[in-house]
Length: 220
Image (tube, rainbow, N blue to C red; front, side):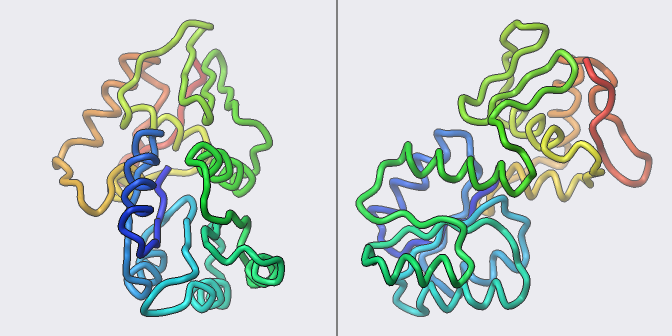
């Protein structure tokens, strides 16, 4: 899952960036509000963490602009503005959740996962596909009730297909989901990940659609 983080505080942003990455998220962090605002308009993020007290543009203006343009990505407001009228205003402007500083990283992760699940029409953290089960909260995968060892990118790719079982993804779309802007991507990285997933699950778990991309295939 790829997260857009817009936070100008260096200490808070650095802690969130490292903490979210350790929890399996791909994270793009912007300290400038205008840059972060443009990022959502060009990249398919699964959720946004938005600070309101940004120096160049108020976070509420960014939120209002996104919702006016019908960008429906789940948004978690993270701010020091803890007064009730501020929380109500943020939610009424289109935010999906509101968390005041100081905060716990564990709560941020839990709220993000809940927002993303709801946006995908999932009520449970457990995704099942035949004999394969994946838990988005614990980041664990079981095949025939046996733990399946996946690399972080392999896990993210399996999660992506399970969350979008009918969608065909191009290689570029998969790269957008797996890699942040500061990561270099080998030209055959996606193919290598898919090859390894097929070896670990089954050959037809991921199907190749000629000239289109990849999609979820047979149940293991």
